[in-house]
Length: 315
Image 1: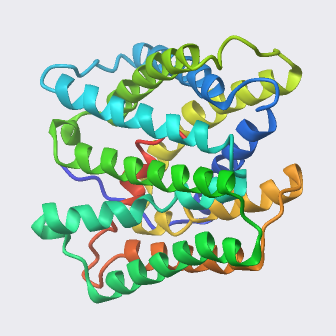
Image 2 (image 1 turned 90 degrees about the vertical axis):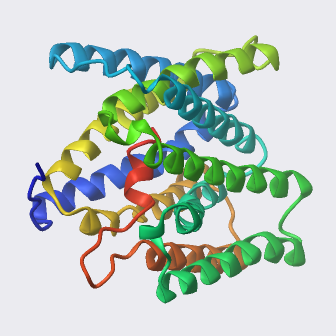
């Protein structure tokens, strides 16, 4: 039975602005505490904290742990999610939070391209192909422009590439869930698969790579991990689920691109990151392209990619 969703009102718009602000601060929080604790260990700890909180909520609301028939897809989704955040954590060691915010949010482009070939009902329209073209030009400018101006180093370029690859894996997770039995599973169960897998894989990777042996539990680290675990991965995603049940998805999706914009802004203001004109222009083209790709058709069909992605990525 379908639930009728209402148009976005002032309360919903306000909630989305707050939510996108929280999501935009995510990369900045990791980067800010990176000197005291490796990003990979921060994300591992926050994933474990979020998983515990999510289990408590599921028990309190007597939500069934939907495992039967979903284990293979759940394990694979968890693996993709974990590798994605390995790339995010490693990328933040080399590039800025501003750059990571933009490149990670290229996921809807990869999602739409994949679903174009896998789902006959998700064929791209002309305006969406235009959006993909603009996003591609924007990515090229963001990469090549910095090299031409001397603003990039090989380390920064490598970090940006890892961010772009993380966006691809985010999209791969979305496509997997849309095309598997997880499509009919509760969103909280799908998220739980990913959080548990992320905690195990990322913690193991941190130990294996030597990034878990040396850290200082400063106030900044405590604040970063608690902010990520409670506000981003737990409360943020639950708030997003609630908004999805109440309002039109196509209207909500228009606000999601405030997240990378907030990410860039906070990176500049709080971390004093420097971004050049090439990156700014490229980022604008990427965001315009993603907006065109995810805008609904005139028939009222909801946009693909972004909204499903945001329910899967604890950002």
